[in-house]
Length: 180
Image 1 (cartoon, helix red, strand yellow):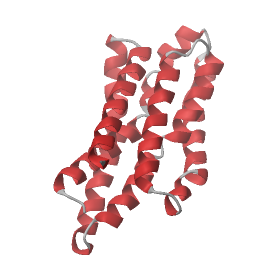
Image 2 (cartoon, helix red, strand yellow):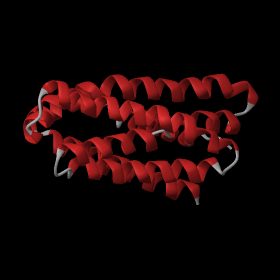
Image 3 (tube, helix red, strand yellow):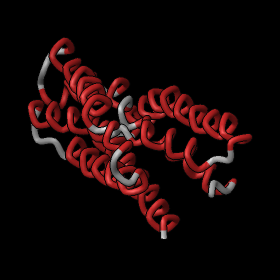
Image 4 (cartoon, helix red, strand yellow):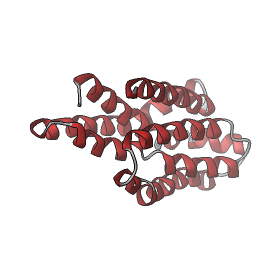
């Protein structure tokens, strides 16, 4: 059953988790400086993340039709936490590139949340419920770049990814607690 609290949690999770795919776009200059690569080379980080995301849409999202969506949501959010930590602690550009691809690949959680909400919602509330989750998704995409740019300017790009890992971990723990 989809309670208002669960719906709010899933809408917030949708925004928080999709944002992980977009933080790097505001942080590329700092990342390039730290890895001693040009702006054209560091742009590969954003490309790798989006290629990973496209791969996840193709390879992982269909698993939601045959496996338990709750477990997939928690698993992908857990994987995103690990990928964010890997990006934050990347020792060099190639490691950051690979970690960014994996981050995009595993950050398909929102695409699992939307059908999960549609399944849980009562038929007369389905459109509103999915709309709220999609609203969370769009807010996450739009807010992620601004937040990352602001925090990155003051704290540094590694700290932004570290903070995102912490927030993703907390959201995952709340989801696990809510599952039981």
